[in-house]
Image 1: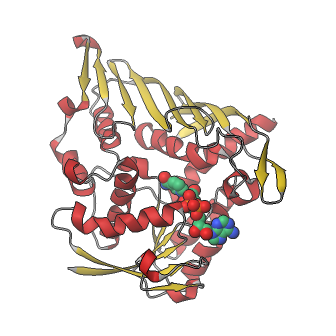
Image 2: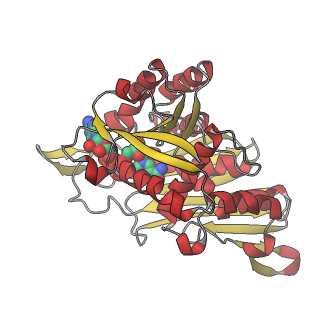
Length: 362
Ligand SMILES: NC(=O)c1ccc[n+]([C@@H]2O[C@H](COP(=O)([O-])OP(=O)(O)OC[C@H]3O[C@@H](n4cnc5c(N)ncnc54)[C@H](O)[C@@H]3O)[C@@H](O)[C@H]2O)c1
């Protein structure tokens, strides 16, 4: 067994979900090789260590410097200083929730600094770990649906449809970097770039449907988008459309990508993370992606994705797979069919988001 000392920053939604993941890994993975010690939790909340499961609670990043990996789960505007301080204090392995900061120029600087200081890093662009994404990428690489002509992708949530939901850091541009496009768009933009290639041109528009929301100090204006529509070009030739919303009644969430090729199409939806649908033109048949399992890539899936009976749901499974991937990488494991999302992946998606925001002000 290899000891891994994990220290976490922030104990909101993500801090808790990541902690559930660390605690569950030894139960959910066969022959798990790590002894995870939940060491320090950086939090200002008045909670005891029995509720969090960490050895101790601290206020300063300097207290985290003997961690084998740190895990940043704080709001976006805090990431930049926390990454800077972590690197200065000698921490070498940094996992950070997406986006790195939500501001493209800052993200470029952080990518450079991490490279200069040889920091192992990963961001929480966890949809890359879904079996359907790994299978889709392989199916496309194998030419099963031919040359890609077009795609249509959306990530619709209803999380801010209720106008009475109060302002939070996510609804303030100075704290989040932007609205739905930053918060959710980054996931689907990353997937498109990961599966199909770099987005080379972007035009779009955004809309804020609910302009005012309650706050502790009365009604406040919202200065970020609820919705965004992007028309993009991939690899300078393939057109596609991406839509993002936090105000669409979608049964909670609906995330889907349909990719059209010259020999067929592929349709994936995160509601079914294990299986997507393939249409094969010359057979005039819809097939489940189970018919297109490639033995070698299935090994990577089996390693990181919890088996059915140990599934904790797509949200925890995907974060757990991503965190396990990072833990494995810093201990020398490589993956053949998964390219882990890094600071660079976040910055690259931020460039697309920046281009969209800039195309609106032209
Ligand atoms: N990859 C994903 O699927 C995913 C999903 C949700 C959130 N995230 C990311 O995780 C990060 C944290 O998001 P979250 O949903 O856990 O947020 P959250 O608001 O639930 O929790 C944030 C934590 O930071 C603490 N905090 C410290 N200073 C704060 C301040 N000045 N203002 C507000 N909170 C402060 C809060 O007490 C809380 O513990 C964000 O970067 C977010 O984008 C990623």
